[in-house]
Amino acid sequence: MQTKGWGVIGASTIARQYMIRAINAQPDSRVVAILSGSEQRARTLADEFDVPRTYVDLDAFLGDPDLDVVYVSSTNERHKAETIAAARAGRHVLCEKPLALNLADAQAMIRACQEADVVMGTNHHLRNAATHRQLRKMLKGGAIGKPLAARVFHAVSLPENLQTWRINNPEAGGGVILDITVHDTDTLRFILGEEVCEVTAMQAAQGMGTDGVEDAVMGVMRFESGLLAQFHDGFTIGHAGTGLEIHGIHGSLIAEDVMTQRPVGRVYLQSDDERFEFTPPKREDLYTRAVRHFNRAVDGDGTPSATAEDGLRSLAVALAVREAARTGRCTKVQYG
Ligand code: NDP
Image (cartoon, rainbow, N blue to C red; front, side):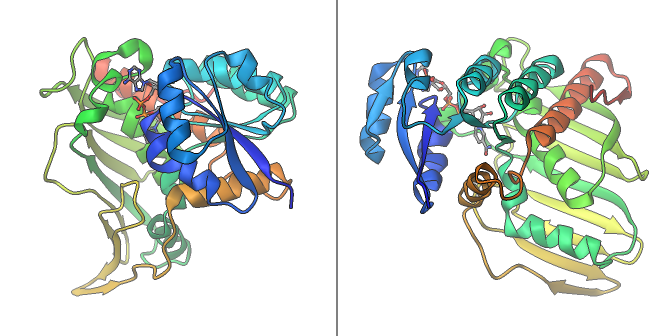
């Protein structure tokens, strides 16, 4: 088995809290380099995880001969240029969500990866959760009959250390819609196996968002089958907990504490007056599973757990939600 060298772009919180560990947890991959705009930030992160090299220049970083895969974890407005540069340098790319700030940029990134014949994936972690995989399996197996409605509860309290560009910088892709609604969309698409056609939404700034950046959104997505999905995403809700429900003709799937980065949560099947727990016994770190599947895709075995196309689709829905919230109009999702 050949070891893949991963390079991390961005001395980010997600890299430090989850992704570097997830890459180094694989028998066939290792983080070999970190790129940051600050030598000090890169060095601090590299020292924490024994990463051998740091860079402050993108070209020098991409010239590192041990680099096979690039993980793009910078702020959202940087994803496009960094992904395209990595692809042109022949590196596979796992890019954070949202892929970009608009659809044309995301399409250009995907095209660059296709032209360079490298694998591109989107780091939508939630579809790697055992709970969401269980929901998908039960739905497919007919546990609740035809699904009619879904509800996603994903309003949380944004930790203090993340109250930076997310709440005050629209140019960096701040705001709860590009941050969280993309995850709701990907998770629903994954579980339901269908696409969103149109959306309505209202947004608000309820104490955190400034400079026109929303920190709360509620809305409804209409799926191809006619299913309606209601969602609530927020940065200022400290005590609600998270969850996802799917309601069908013969029963409901209720999942609690599942819109999270950690491998936790419970899954129930409710029908008539009975509620049975179907929480999957086997749990795995979501990001570790994502990296394993990405490495396999690089080896020609399958696809990343969330592909570049999945990232494009979640972005398209989030952009439609933003448009709907700004105009007050029901908005059709434009995928291309
Ligand atoms: P951070 O705010 O922690 O880091 C983003 C960038 O900000 C870094 O690349 C870094 O730039 C810069 N930065 C970090 N600390 C400082 C500082 N003290 N002063 C100045 N600049 C600083 O971002 P997140 O980790 O929260 O998010 C990064 C990306 O990952 C985003 O695209 C986000 O949407 C995504 N994300 C995905 C998650 C998932 O589960 N899939 C979860 C969380 C985030 P530099 O490159 O110069 O070091």
